[in-house]
Image (tube, rainbow, N blue to C red):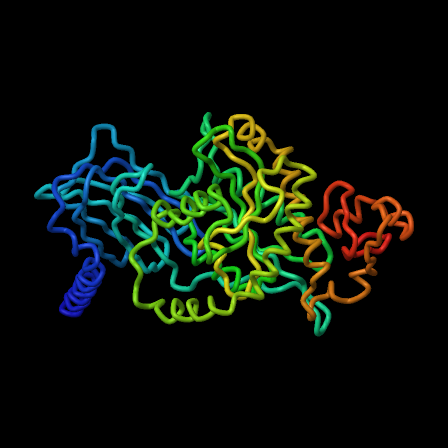
Length: 451
């Protein structure tokens, strides 16, 4: 009997300590919080954590702690009520098995999450950012984050080229929203998945999805994921909006640290760089300071990466122009945070503008999404075939084929006939659209059996 009491006391003490440790960040601004209403609870499932979002009518004072046997995460919302008809969200897989709630004494409202395994909660509040009001965010992290998938079997000394495909926005950040409820985050996820499939089908290439579900990934984290997978190329896919509904067409962007190349580029970069505020990224912690310092230092040596990004962007522009109306027929530059990878060539593709009714309708169709995805994949593939990493399988002559330098009087159809390949294969291998070629341009000639 005494032993049981000791165990219970220990368990209670441990839970109390956990509660005290976890509540400190949330209590910092608690004094200013008044009576609030809990408007809804939302959940998003990411690969390494489950995000729970409490939408409240005003600033909220809260306490968070964990309990064992059974495992629970408890959130007490002080001076908080719920409206009549408030619905408890159903668990949608992941670590949360059930959600329970009930009013407590002195105006406290308690929400309990029954979890299937040990979690490490991180939590923070967010000030209103349209389209959202006040939010309390609780991220339930698994103790061991998922590791990158192992590479496919490759010949000794050679490897696949890795392309990181990033679908913009996600989770709490819908991106642009077209009339009729077409969300940018859904459109670009579909295009990104299709582009990744096309990249995977090409011999010597492998795609890595940065976001493969409806959850938010911070801008810096997106570039970090690409680097963790040792990506040779990073492409972020978007379908944004502009102030005027008349603006339309696809665009390709590379990073600029000297100012944007156009008013549109500047406006879009400013809009995209606010995504962390909308998507929900908490205050910067001390634990990643070393990584931030390294990032700043590496930013100073990005010249080579930027040149490669511009070249890859030109290849994608050429490929996209064959399937989509272009807003600009050259690569534009702006200070997009998501492109600030110091050692991975990175581009951002605006597949069109959801603020344009005609283009929004087109981007919502599977057929157009497939064409755009194939064009993006072909443009990236063409660039990497012309500029392969030296340790990649595509760097061998067997995979690269031969080269042809364009001379005055050459046409694409004549070159295709000379090397006994189709013009379509030439366009795909070189990331070009139409029949326009220029003197001095180097074409990769794929093998007639395909590459």
